[in-house]
Amino acid sequence: MAVLELRDVHLTYRTAQGPVPAVRGVDLSVDGGEVLGLAGESGCGKSSLVASVLRLQPRSATVTGQVLVGGENVQTMSWRRLRAVRWGEAAVVFQGALHSLNPIQRIGRQLVEPILLHDSAATPRTAADKVAGLLAQVGLPETHADSYPHQLSGGQKQRVMIALALTCDPQVLIADEPTTALDVMVQAQVLELLVGIARQRGMGVVIISHDLSVLATTCHRVAVMYAGRVVELGPAQELFEHARHPYVRALARAFPTIGEARSRYAPAGLPGDPPFPDRLPSGCPFHPRCADAVDECSSVDVRLRPAGPGRVAACVHVGAGVG
Image (cartoon, rainbow, N blue to C red; front, side, top):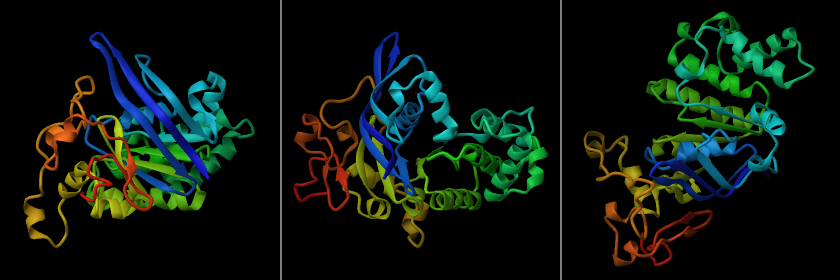
């Protein structure tokens, strides 16, 4: 059963130069216990899409479409109901734990606060007991409750952020670049932790990352965004190894492959840059950078179409026996 559904979600920023479409018609769903990866280059709309889930977008942004958490549309909720849904039913592990934790409050106090705010039956004693359990679940000793953020390593702070998101037992957990600035070993531990929590609690988890290879080994399914849209969606390992969209193939080739000396020392790059949201090219927005582009690509804006069992891709070659 889907715990999170996005139906034709658009997010547009109002600027002095005019509207800027950051998210353009995204449809996604996440089931309980499922881990969904969301990949793409900077500027493709990943973080803007996440902001729309709990109405965290700035006032300069307008969101249309439906964002359903537990079957309720977040975009039409009252402020009182939205406050209950945040933390209680859906939570976000924000990018950059160093900047997300209060530097002058101890870790325990920061973890206790949402519990007392959202659970009317909680007392300081029961909240402290829950905090001890949460710290243990994310692999930290109970004594870290008395620590300040600056006394913890980057990996430990990231674990605290995960514990903070779990304080009110949400159905949906969104991790925005949870392994940024962490070394490879700690990255693996944090991702393993997120997957284990999803399995144990039956939560739907969304992991956002630039690294398609990491998502391929961590997630059940992966959605890849480009220019504000999902351009391919499918089972994680299949999508990484046999992508149908040229952009996704280029992302996969950009990461070194163990055992392949050529990719280790010279990973294939992707020339050019993503288009500015307010200056999208005609047709397929990827065609100016695409090695497989044909004349049709500059005039036809292809939407997602079937690309195999459980897979969709937005490319003129899909369904034509090519790609």
